[in-house]
Image (cartoon, rainbow, N blue to C red; front, top):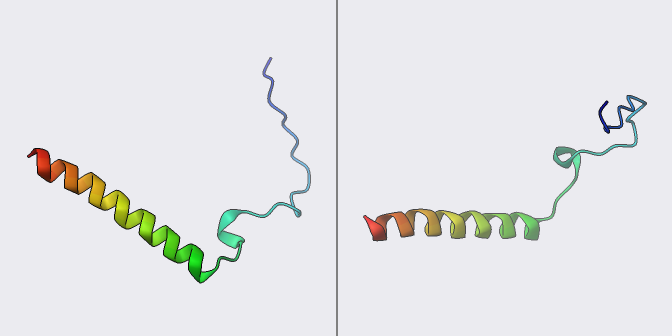
Length: 49
């Protein structure tokens, strides 16, 4: 037996992330996080190389 709820009912009320609107400030925050992540990833790798 599994403990999962397999309710395959009507999902019209469900909203997925790509369908939601986002603001310009949220885009800016996402880009800042991307740049910081890339700098950390490649910065540490190049520093240790």
